[in-house]
Length: 64
Image 1 (cartoon, rainbow, N blue to C red):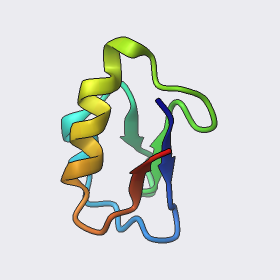
Image 2: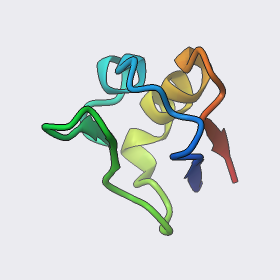
Image 3: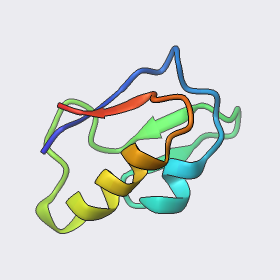
Image 4: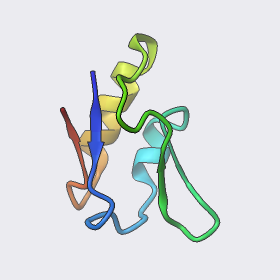
């Protein structure tokens, strides 16, 4: 499963990080870091990645 991030839409709320800290992070500037950009999220992290997509208040994440 691939998760696609719209970095222009992201406002740095960090709810994705709360839900899936092994998939997402915020850097020192508050910008989104997607650890699996362009590749499939490992199977053992898919459930938390889906929760992160659902938690994003500005729909900056979507399942690809």
